[in-house]
Image 1 (cartoon, rainbow, N blue to C red):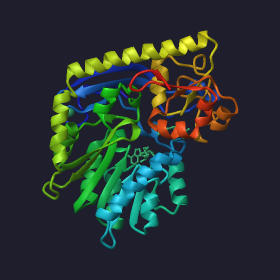
Image 2: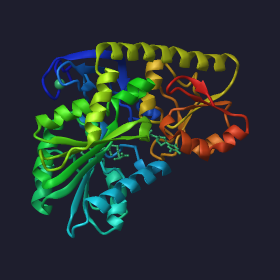
Image 3: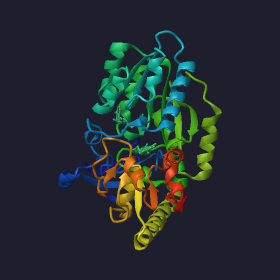
Image 4: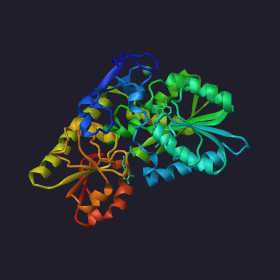
Length: 408
Ligand code: SAH
Ligand code: TMP
Ligand code: ZN
């Protein structure tokens, strides 16, 4: 696709603040025989000088990212299963008490959130385009429609099921560039007093922690309270609540309603003030971020090159989508990280996109520990370090790079 010179949401002008260069599709793990077919695009990120929304300069067609072979399964993390159980329980306790209440989740993946709703016998529908994970959810007894959520899907769901009290999306709304169609769909589907709730990585946390690996094809927008408030207003909705979450390195859960339907929480104004003080979308802040990214790249390369020179072995842990940006931008290939271990069967036996590091099972990691393990899944550090305590017991050290390069 060609570059977008103006804001995808308000049409304002974009100011680019980082260019990662040529990058592959982050979840496109590749078989050795298919290496000649890899797709690359220019990964660059910009901020809108009018509405302040941070966004990719170039998007790639959605079918290249989300399809039958989309490998990410949300339920691979016990900590995330607990997180989504709590999300579901809170909807059940506060929003879905009336008999017949209906909740729609888009990006429901393998049903990590909806399984709790289904178990409570509450009416629900997942909308999920990636067929394999949609089928995994259906196998758990969850009602799923294998489709992209957008205006036309929402109309069909409304015609068949009536209004929804809650429309929910985790780590999905910021993945789609066509927010106009999503908002029109929510408008069709949402009950007059219903809420649209979404949780996504927070730009302020990315900037503060230099977690630049959050920037890849699937993450089209990088929300802030200010930019989401402006976006909601533009599509006829009101931002009524925000909650800062510790998951995935820092996210915000936004609650949006029809204007006047809900009393706004004081948290909204508090976060707007905080973002103003941080100068979150200002040029000086984003220039500093860009300098920190370059510096992090050098520090990480230094550590890995030193390991290689000293004959130490390094494996990666967690073949995350994030690691595509990290490895390709930092020039980390199998010469520096010999393999990546990951518990996702659909990734094992393949090579990481662009950087071509083999993906193996955690059993192979435990069978012969390396000297160092570079924790690509740093957002799951507590869970993984707990699970792999044998690695440190045998003298292994974790290499972490968020918020800076350090050994544990
Ligand atoms: N909600 C889960 C999964 C996030 S991964 C979690 O937070 O862990 C993002 C998911 O959104 C993928 O399963 C992808 O197939 C799906 N997706 C992408 N675009 C979508 C769209 N327009 N409508 C519904 N789902 C979408
Ligand atoms: P995520 O950061 O996008 O959630 O991806 C995490 C990746 O790490 C995913 O491919 C699964 C993998 N993983 C493990 O291999 N072991 C684990 O214990 C956890 C939590 C994740
Ligand atoms: Zn804008």
